[in-house]
Image (cartoon, rainbow, N blue to C red; front, side, top):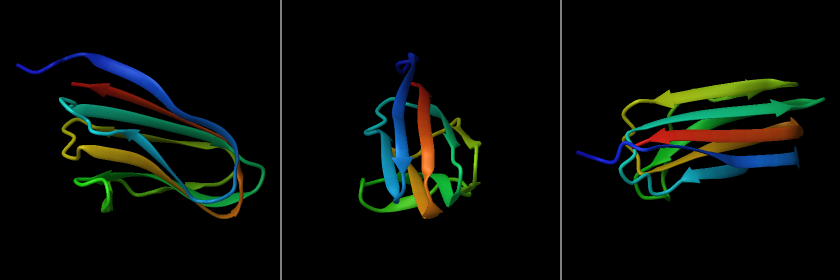
Length: 110
């Protein structure tokens, strides 16, 4: 049997994000079988996206969900009950404007 401990941590709590950013959440996800990610943001004027990416080697990244359009205030939820990637991150893009605030939380169970 594996380790069935649950854990939660805040990954990012930033202000004035005006360029693309990659927030690495947990690497490697040893003995982790399930993850949940919550990203929440505010913005006065913004055109961008927030999505989740996974990687086998930490170099080549693949979209794990359809990125959520980020405008004004919003949030994104992502859950995976059978995580297949040892590396996972939140990928933020900004086409114009900026995130006034951005908070990312990660919960995992292994």
